[in-house]
Length: 445
Image (cartoon, rainbow, N blue to C red; front, side, top):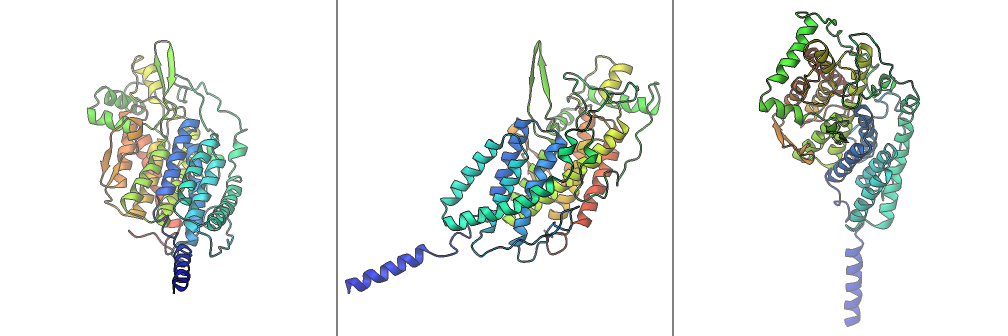
């Protein structure tokens, strides 16, 4: 009798300990990918990548993670292969023992690690996450097979990324400063050269060309008092002189300048900050959490937002280095008040159009398509950089605030803001109409 009871207990214990799918609920939401994205943001700041380059670093890992998620979506989600420019469709065979949420995370980590300088920081984060996941009961063979599969998808996305002309553009000529009075000039305190003057040579994901939504020309340059251009500069001058506390708070909240340099006496030191794209990827992550998305939905949100930002920067930089327009700081110091300073540090690239206006609106249109208009969220993205939260009743309201912050900060004229916002909206709406993800249409929330 005792022998029989022992055998039954062994069989029972064996059966309980070897449930084949008892690890399936280890990853249910997007928290692991969002944590990986947060680490990527930290590294982007640490490595001081420019805003356009940062948008590229966010996009490819998010695309890789989403492509794995598609395979777990039971046919509800459509692959981006065949939809993004030159992203050819291939089939990936998934065996039953591949745990797709883990594979998606592995794909994100591998692609992200290839795009940064501080690779050890990303590997350490990955290793810590993987150690935690292993401790939650994912069998070793499943773990290894899932990581291997995710990295296989990652390799395909990495190969795709290498053909976007980024690496070739590293050897292109630097921007040559013009002596024309209307042309952009480097500004203090660092007088940095113009960054990424050839970014319009980068392959976009969805746009047919960088100039597809070409902005109308900026106001004709004129130094005469009373001229249209003079009045635009005078508006910047007066707004900054008479800022309210709320306007000042808005300016600093959306500053997002990774090049900020502080000068105290003879001491000069850099202040590392998040990029504009990083701020909106943070908003995408916050929104995913707020909406309680599962890990597949989170992967979709991060991928589509990053694509909008990437194409937004390409279109914006196309215009910046076509018009190469003088910044308010340079113009006002020369023609209005030589002592005047903006409250934000002027970024090292031409004025027209406003980058934040373009990419914020492109991201806002994309996020609105995913979560709907009137989606309330608490933007805590800047808390880590010493700024308080701000709450918004919609993504479009947030984008409007991001755009006007450039006037309050003293770094853009109004046409760059208005026309930049218009360009961004068009890009976002074009992307929404062009890319099909969930159920072959926009995900309805």
